[in-house]
Length: 199
Image 1 (tube, rainbow, N blue to C red):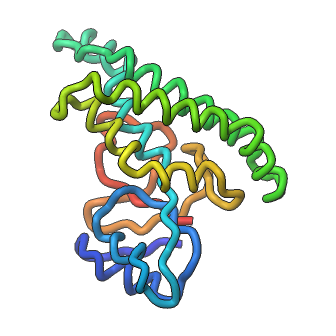
Image 2: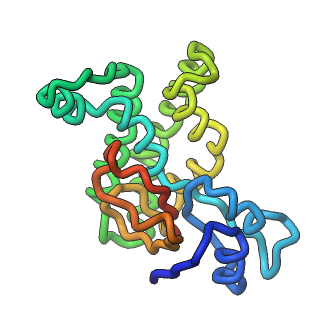
Image 3: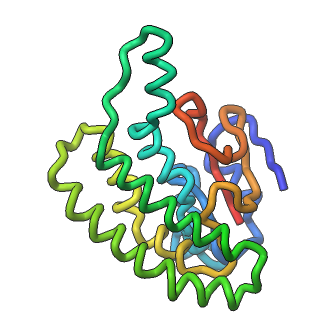
């Protein structure tokens, strides 16, 4: 489904999802905040983070190919962050699991996530929490880590759910505004428009 709104006001997703109750897979767009409130009717939505958005921030800091293009054009290459590379590697391991279970029954996806993904998600959380204090608050990598860590319950909801998707090529419905469009399969620095995915 596609739903266009003329601006980024939170009233648009609230109206569009007025009757919906359940899991809501999305980025950290502030317009969704009221959807998670305890007094929302018919019920508060359960936030499930979009891992593509989380990965994108690390990917930008670890984009070796973009740096090679910059260098070939005679421009200064950005420093590649080893920690960002490690974060992308860890998230991609989860995406690989998701690709292997895509199309299977909800029960099989849930079982695979519990057996294969849950330990990786727990390790990722521990690693992020260990690395984050080593970085200054204004550091771009710190911001990428904060995006995930501050929303960890929502990230773990996505990883544990049988109905939500994690991989960048998984199905998602998009609620675009005038400034946004659908999730791209491969996040790039040039592709910086805000996306919001729901399932």
